[in-house]
Length: 267
Ligand SMILES: [Mg+2]
Image (tube, rainbow, N blue to C red; front, side, top):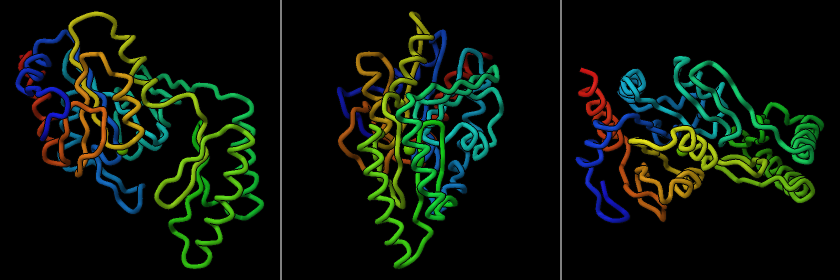
């Protein structure tokens, strides 16, 4: 554990959690609550995490919000989430609320044409099974291909997606084992801003936990608020976070302390 901005004090923070009128724990999933695994369909949370999150979410005036790059459907499936857990999916493009409502933000016509073109191209190239579609993105995965075939897929995808990005204004995002076209305009920062606005004025305790570049958008959106921004990562890097915790032990301890703090107010 290391404080990165001014030296803080976790005892003071959890005292604030204990005495606040409402508490919001926002967290990313992959790399934060769950380790990276080769098959992302098997990315289960670290042992104990699910239980402590459910405890926090079921306490009075306390909620857990998951903000993820996955789709909401995918996130709810992988964690077997109960319906009362709020989830923001696809980097802020969709929101599942505890009342069961599901909102998807509309994307501009030029962007949706670009995404459709990518799918049509993959269909013609017989690569459709490698395509993953989300509300505002299309990704092509080549990680499971081998040898020359992998190189060929990589090359033609790079070429085609780059052209589509240039023509449509979609953003090109490289990840380990594939390439993604993303609609610009929304990110995890939009999600946390809306959550903060809805809370309004008052005595709130608020934290955001995340590990990668997309979480930096949320850290930046919380600049100037009294939220605690926590980087959860094995190695420290340049970040806008206030506190660095190593997964899984320090992260789990943080969640447990939150649960203990809120528990003592409901007894
Ligand atoms: Mg992550």
